[in-house]
Amino acid sequence: MVGCLTKSLLRCVAVNCGSLQSPNKGTVLFKSTIFGSTATYTCDDGYFLVGVSTRTCQLNGEWSGTTPTCTAEKVGCPPLPHIQNGIVTILGNTVGSVSKYSCNKGFQLEGNIKRTCQKNGLWSMSEPFCRKSELYKT
Image (cartoon, rainbow, N blue to C red; front, side):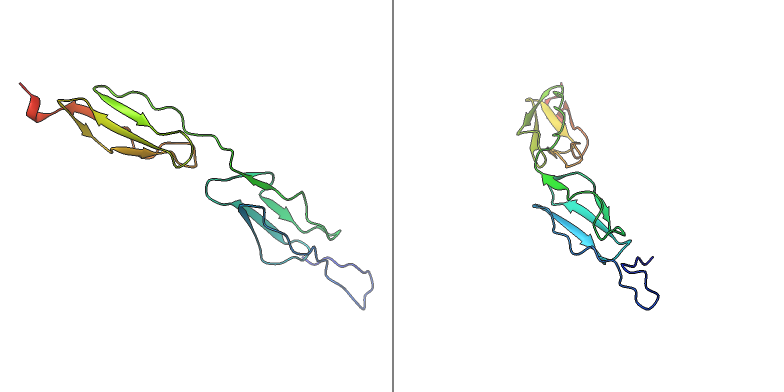
């Protein structure tokens, strides 16, 4: 698709919207800046996009919409439930935070000792549990 700035049959100048700047803590990717081209915005890990993720070069020579921003504000992971016969130590609920599991005396942990809050707002891995240790069975 080609847009022209002039209507002359002898000369057609392609509409060019010009380059775009990446948002702070983010990136903008585009292959071209002429009419019909699209630009896609993403944010660095741990940051969330506020605004539109895609802009299009319009016939008037301007990009659609406005430049989005990247913010560190994010929804954290939900609280983790207590485990029977054990303890959950939660060291925060923001992306990258870690929770650690341990069992009471006489019980053994089955599963992962650590879980991490992921950027999708969910804890990694499945919840472990504590089972009676073979050494303490009577």
